[in-house]
Image (cartoon, rainbow, N blue to C red; front, side, top):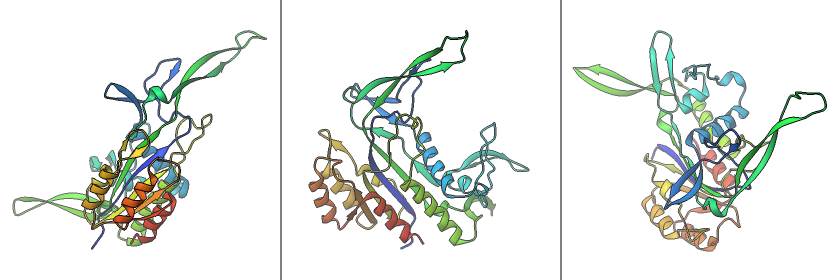
Amino acid sequence: MEKKAISAVWLAETDLTNLNAGIGGSNLVDLKKYKKGGVDYPYVSGQAMRYYLKEGIRRLVSSDKYCVANDKGETCGAIESCILCDLFGFLTTLKEQGAQIRVSPIKMSPAMGLLPLNDNLTIDFLTRRKPQQEAGKLSGDIVNVELGVNIYKAGMSIDLAKIGVEEVIEESDGKRHRKFEAKVEDEKEKNERLKLALEAFKNLSDYSKQARVLTDFTPNLLLIALQSRYNHLLQKAIELKDGRKLNVERLDQVLTALKDETIYAGLLSGTLDNEDDIKEVLSSHNVKLMTPTEAIDQVISEVK
């Protein structure tokens, strides 16, 4: 059966870092936070997650393969020649066409921290030096920075049918119809764009504030699927309970619902407290377990 989507959900454990700052103040670089049950948790916005993936793609291709947004935030909109406009969509004004919207084939969720901030947060400070006002004197500000250790849950979905095509509405016999108009005719080129996105996912690295707090945000636990039906059900497969234990009952239920799809799993040892239970559930569903990088490589090898 033809594959309609690639879906992934993962957990990423970070070292002490601040991946995405909130509003803060002039002397505070805080973490973005959400509240659940009256408790603060960190998160990384979906916009930031998309940016990390975009930067990963930029590192893999020459600069003539993509555009850079202008001072109004508009991009070229030429999906036949621009990889990023094709994969990530746009809202722009095109010459002789007016305003145009392209829905992104790639969808990224925010990365939701799963460990409470109260137990995993510290305040560090950095100094911002200013030009000397008087000879022999130094001036500057001390800025407080919130840093945290956490496990984040994130997700991604790629709508394969929309890569390299434009969705248009046409009228005939008094009725309006939707159709896909191919902008990239070469199937090999579309496959290469998809593989670039997956390679970038495997090599995420351009997060904010990494000059001083270097960490890695690639998956520790990953489920990635080649799906014959487009849905986001895999996003429900990962849930932590009792601290660092995965809810294996939930995992079993979601894998049962997706029994007809091709799913691979990747795990780095030492991430969760009930890894033996996880392996048992995966084995019962014939889901092959490897490292996260190997799981992504397996999907890349099957892209057609």
